[in-house]
Image (tube, rainbow, N blue to C red; front, side, top):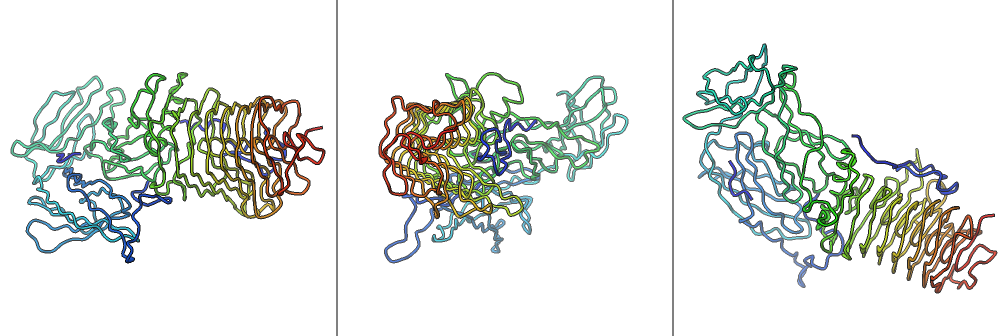
Length: 609
């Protein structure tokens, strides 16, 4: 009873980077849940008092505490306390003076699953909550008492199915059982029921009874053709913040969670916390005797992660960092369904990542691994205080923007990305960018400001690593591209580009503006560094771009640098047009010529033969 309730895996063109990919061009493409925590420098974070004492955490709010009780579970949940990393619960039974202590990290717990604690059959329990975190004083105690429902009957566990006769384990305390077949009820005092006469598929529900009280229901499906029982799929999924909930399936001993990468996990509670985990693709009951009751089919389930309909006039609305992560769910479902219509997404407000705990490794932003075929409209809103420490190949928000996909009108401010992937057995050179690793769609109206992007080997770009589509009318302001330590391959970075690293055949980079960009490192071994595009391949267009105050502070001897493009396979593809070429310095010296024979120029540095 509820009280106080508040596959095809489709990384379409996600590819592996061979270590010499940058050298031989775009023909070789790289392959590609926590509560609390302060994240970055948040101005709202409590500071130590003048006398040096620690700031005190807020208390758990009584009105947010809810209880959900069944024969198998007793789930207690409360709203997370800002900055709390754990909670101590002091639990007493009835009028007892002794208490049981436990500590949990998440603001939800199933008391029936706590080792060493037994929930009484009746009476009450009293819980005292204390929020905790390092560098903070414990919160004041919040106390709440819950009256237990009394004896609750378990759902019957089906143990046999022979010749059309369903048998189940007797439920303690039960005096009879109700069996419903397609909604028609029958009563039995035995723990078996014959459905051999059924000639069509049916839903069978079994529940124990005592004194007019009915216990939890076991519900299964009967396949008349195969003459088999299978578990009911879970259809009543609801989202509570970053917690996915569902109704219990009678007879299930647990639930298998399948995420978007088709990893599976088994839980024993009817909820799953996704704060620091991948988004859920599906939930399926695990039966104790799968040889008797087979598992439900693994297919995508309908989860309402986002409000809106996903259409151009009624887009899915993104309001939180978690909402942004769920884009992969909708894109995967569309791909599997063969939908040709786009999904439309709109960011509904500014999103500050400073209070988001680490999600992927040490990063507070999840990357989107599924090919993006929709339209993401930032509506002019800002995503701020993004921090990434990555060690698994390339990093960008989108692995792959497909043909027809569009990312537009988003501002990113206060970004720090460190990509230092190094493995001695396979020391590839990683790449770093804010928006996309491979772009075949359109990136337009995006602004990146106050960002530091660092790579050990490989390269770094403000927005896109490999561009086959269009990057138009974007801004990069007050940013730094930085090399890390020398990689295991003996090089620091191959390429640096303020907007795009490599503009590949068919790609267009136009009408972008870069202001106050620095490219620096620990040694003079950066190659192909530019304000707009590091490498422009044959058949790719760069035109009408502007910059001012672009400084390449370190550059490998003999390598090229350009205010707009460092290396162009065909100089005819690089056009100043309406662009404005401002101050451009290399190693502290100002560059004056649009093109110079030494491989350094205000428009481009080196051209192909």
